[in-house]
Amino acid sequence: MAAHIRRRLRKGATTTAVAAAAVAALAASQAPAATLADGPAGGGDPKAAGEDTASAEDDGAATGNSPYYTDLPPLVTPDRPGASSNLPTTGSAEAGIPASILAAYKQAEQTVATTDPACRLPWQLLAAIGKVESGQARGGRVDANGTASPRILGPALNGQGFALIKDTDGGAYDGDAVHDRAVGPMQFIPSTWASWGQDANGDGRKDPNNIYDAALAAGRYLCANDRDLAIAADLDKAVLSYNRSNEYLRTVRSWFSYYQRGTHEIPDGTGTLPTTPSTPSPNPGPSTDPGPSTTPRPKPSPDKPGGKPSPGPSKPGDGSTSPTPKPPTSKPTPAETFGSLENAGTGPLRATAGQAFDERVSVLARNALGAPLGKVPVTFTVTGNTGTLFAGGKKTVTVRTGSDGTATAPELKAGEKAGEFTVTAVAGTGRPRTLTYAATVTARQADAIVRTDEKALVAAPGEKFGNAVTVKATYKDASAAGVAVTATMVKDPLGLFDNDKGPYFQDAAGKPVRTLTTLTTDAEGVLRLPEIFADDTEGTFKLRLTTEGGASVVIELTVQAPEEAAPEETAPEETAPEKTATPEA
Image 1 (cartoon, one colour):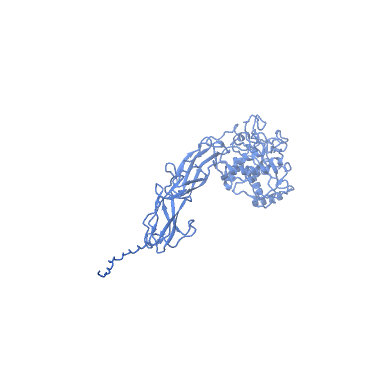
Image 2 (cartoon, rainbow, N blue to C red; image 1 turned 90 degrees about the vertical axis):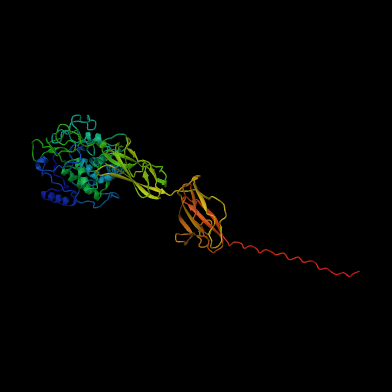
């Protein structure tokens, strides 16, 4: 269809000079980001006129080149940068968006942000396309469920001023069993809807006449081919995939810029319908289109009055005016196209040093329609210095998703160093999708530690303790190997106060230290402490041993001088009793 340049810039613009000034003002303030060649000055064959109908990234159809509205937004914009929330509640009906229509656009944005966050779909782009395609569902004339009533149909795509697309749906969507017609608020042709249709309102039906279903389908369609719509070039490609006409792109871009500056919500059914269609018609006069009276009507080609209409620019999907559109053979369908990567329910990743992680990293791949996608290669990589590896001693592994769209990495085995690391999952080419999982390795733990003997620990001042201190750590009654133990000389059993007198250890230089933090139990969970020395302070002191996991034991150390031996007592010498002389008789 030829792009019709004549646009209604503003009501009341009655002179060519006023119209030209309005176009210049709008072009200066709302030009698209990408530089595009201007279309022909009138209707007719755009190729003959030199119009650049830049091809989209794929050949899938959105609207089958159905007509669209070329009216531009008001010259005075809301001037509310980034106003996607807290919108004004008043304003003209022409600039407002009906409540149900606005809700559908925002819901589609949120849904796509969940399944394909890398696309960065803005609802304002959907609003711009919806404005150009159907005047926001004919001014918001939808029922309580968001379904257009009566349904919105474009003219028959019968090759008479339009692309020639014979019926593909038996009239199920468009009521035409001879030729296809664009259907619904976002103007999908039936063959495209068969691939991209969505059920966004949960009623069990994929209805192109329902604004919620159609808005989500349009969002997914625009995000195809790994597009990032925050990039101007990708956004332009997405719009051109809807209609391969630069005139169409300029019109959509103008409304997109307008809605980005702000808009307001209006009641359903109160919006105004644009009046200037883009499509020439072979027959002037009333249209025989069975669609509603507000459907864009074909008009005579301005450069060929009364003559045979010239074919318009090809739309993705038809590619030409051939009798039947041929789907692409070199590119995958939406159901086969990788769209997004999500966490498939992976829980917290924590494990003790040297142990296997109970949780395994799992991801879910979805196609461009949001359904699970199988056979997608996903590469998992461990990054960090804890020594953690996948089973088999690998840091990187690649796993393909199954029929349910999930891929699960091999079991992780924690290294011996405590700390944090990451596992990264990457899938897709061109613009890969990436998920990053944080993981933690905790030190080996013990829930009990005890001395292995009960010998008294006594030393004289300035000497070393003769008996070594040996302890054993256990975890859940099993030997706890490789557990870090801290030994501290303390004044109280709780270890609240360190001791600066009494027993001590020695460092490599032979200087006294009263805390050791480099101790570790052996393979049997046993730890033999280094030698302990006593200074000149006598008394009873305490040694506290604590482990990772909170186990502890307090051991008494006594410093006392050895007792002096008592001197032996000497028995007095026995003397003979003196004899007393007796007088002789």
